[in-house]
Length: 385
Ligand code: MG
Image (cartoon, rainbow, N blue to C red; front, side, top):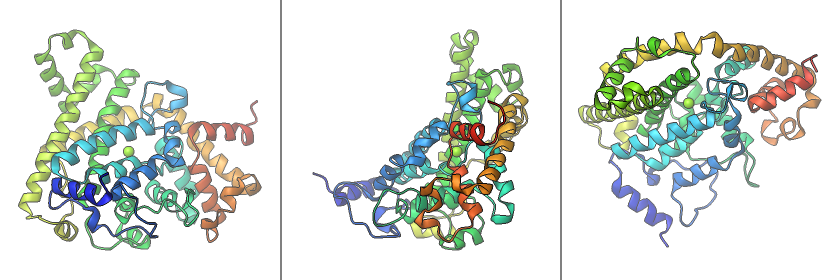
């Protein structure tokens, strides 16, 4: 049998010198022993895959309200799988720690509430006087507090480096308040997952918008990177000019490859230019090492502006999410007035003893899937049968 030490040694031999190594980890909040044949971050990954919040991603909206719009579009779980796949590919190409990148990607959206960004806005609004709501901080609360699988501690007892993934968009004070070192750059693995997320949603949102007929193919040709990529693939394969679905797939595939390739090349350049050789170099002066080239950044930003205006703000997309923004607030207010209807395991959670009642109710509502929120809203807040 290959032991944990063998596996980590083998892993170290293939990692770039600036990658995060298991031996350099700051460890877990509680020492809970060493599994005989799993590397450090592999164990974190297993804990995420087996947790309840991960399974709930299947029934949480990415952009389209999944329970109402059809089964072919992305939900949070399939989005998460796409991010993970893209992130692992890039990590392997750059010699970064693939196990760490995998768990960071699998966990990156765990803190999202039901109904996508509208849900987050709704909860942030009702929580204004009680500290607000942020899906990254919520993700950390889930893995640190709510998930109850072990008799010795609350949460999943993940390593510092996995938990750090949830701090990527927080300001320094928030980071420090959560116990993370101030003034340090995130590992390259954390930086990478953020961009893999962008590559995934930019491309899959384009595909979902076309397939759902929310945006026409003529309209999307206004975006330079789409138009040029379409011309490229059609010049290579005659059939693509005649087969619309295959053409869209080919463009989306090529867009993922182009962005991933650009990210790898540009990041390598930055790492060399800034003379980065070790993890310590990364921590000390490694901010924004993993990134796209200026040209790709410009193209991506045009694409994102287009999606924002024509997809995320489209009445077809907004019709359910807008309605649910209000309904989630109804649910929050209902439970605040009737806390006895919040389940016992949430209300009397041993990790939440110091919390305001509003925070506990927000945690409960944020943990709901779209369909469970819908059921509870119908049961408690709707006069309709
Ligand atoms: Mg995401």
